[in-house]
Length: 306
Image (cartoon, rainbow, N blue to C red; front, side):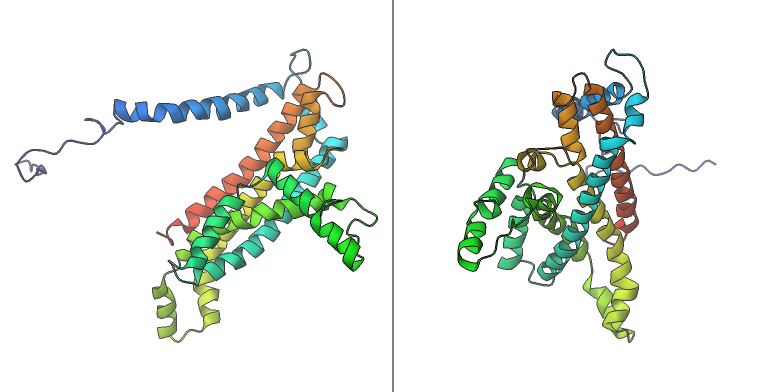
């Protein structure tokens, strides 16, 4: 005799309907709701990426070529990539360290305390504060005629720009980028710290473990993947930033986004738009690698913070 599996029924005796249709597929209404999002992604992400991908392998006449890609490893273009990576890595490390310390100070406080709410709200705003407003804020504060600059020069006798216009070079970009990297670290890293359960520390103490033992064998291994993932996210955020550098650096193109602007606008030589697209493809590859490693790290730690 063949066994028949029981059929689940509702209290009224009817069989519950499967979500998304008989085959479990999303309903037509679900697809309609997703249409605006898919259209947005297609227009502002997929379509530009396709243009960059094909344009990187074409010369000014539309013929296929690998010359644009080989240029990435020569001259000022390669130097721009090196400077961009150095700038992104440095600001990511600074933002990750100081952001993690601030996040820890917030996490050990009251969950509904005023300090936590203020820091989280401020971080959400400052992490998105960039471009022309951020550049103007630094110029008005520590520019050549900024408030702090004039006060130090007139009252203390210190000229912070003595011998160098560092604010408009890589050191200045490092300072400005760090301004939005730290709050971004707070937003990204806070859920990982909140995921540390008190029971783990209690279990460690009940087994005779010390605070060092807890961080060595429990807290440290759990927080390392999300910390490294946040570090990679900060790197990608700085590497792809454009508006702030464009507003602050008016002369020269020390980093890749500004190099792309020069090629697309023809500031150096006309007809090099596809070389700019090759630089854009290089940026896509670098950011994709960073985000791919970030995804792997997040999957590794997901089982601990559920």
